[in-house]
Structure formats: C-alpha cells, structure tokens
Image 1 (cartoon, rainbow, N blue to C red):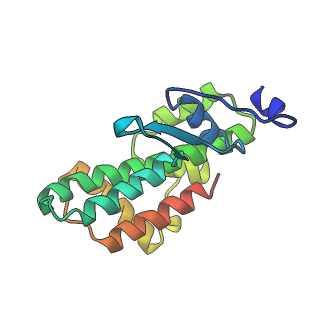
Image 2 (cartoon, rainbow, N blue to C red; image 1 turned 120 degrees about the vertical axis):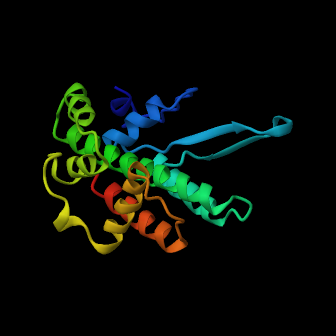
Image 3 (cartoon, rainbow, N blue to C red; image 1 turned 30 degrees about the vertical axis):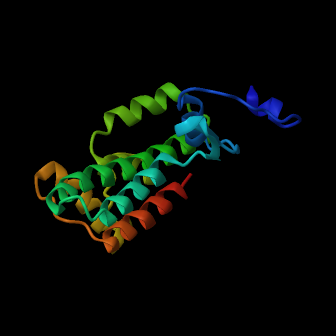
Length: 179
C-alpha cells in the first residue's frame, strides 16, 4: 500500500525497529532508508540505514584493524561475521527474487527456514533451490569467503586478513546484486 501512495506522494515512516527496513530490503522496493540516532549529549545525527550484510562486512574490516584485540579472539569471531554477512546477503537476494515472482512471503519463509547451511542458503539465492551444487558459482574469492564462514562451525578458525575481508566484501556485493 505504501508503494502505491509513494508513486504520487513522499512517504515518511518512523519506526523503532528494523522490520519495515527488512521488508524493503527483502522485496527490492525502491526506497531510501535513513536512521535518526541520538548520540551522547542528546546530539541527533541522520545517516543512511546500512544494509545488514554490508554492516557485517564493515565489522570484519574493523575487527581486522583492531590492534588491541588478540588474534585468537579475532580468529574465533571472524567466521561468525562472515556467515552473518553471506547469509544476510543471500536472504535479501532470495526474498527479493521471490517477491518479484509473486510468491507469498510465507512460502519464502518456509523455504528459507528449511535451508540450514550457509551454502544451501546461497544456493537458494543463486538458483532458487537449496540442493543445487554451488561449485560452478564458486570463484576463488567466493570459495575462500565460504571456507572462512564454515571454519567456525568446524573449529578450524584462523586469523583473517584484509585480503580475506576483501574477498567477503566482493562476494557479498555479488550476492546482493542478484536481487
């Protein structure tokens, strides 16, 4: 309904949570999302609402650059951030494709919830089927990003580098472009 109104009027919605922003991202609606944030001293700032997948990538870069955090902690935290970034991008791409195809949101949620692994969720976003083999899609940088993501689940976590973060960033942007 808001999309129809927005064709002829400016629509401004204030919300205290991320549900509307999630729907906008996941359905591919053309909208500008901004955040109004109250900082210390009641200073108010307005900034673009950063896509969660991109925010997780930014977190990885910040983690790598943090000289005060021990490398073993970074190594344990990085795979989870890689996974969250990849899965967030995959979810947005999958839901946007489903919405454009006219699929009910409940059907999309059911499909998404049955795909438990990151690779299955990526397969949903890329091919629409969680069972399809990702091997043909896995360029070297994508393979490296997915390997780091899976390392946390298998206890093989190692220190990640800026190069690894760049691989993740490129992969996330490519998955988001599937929308």
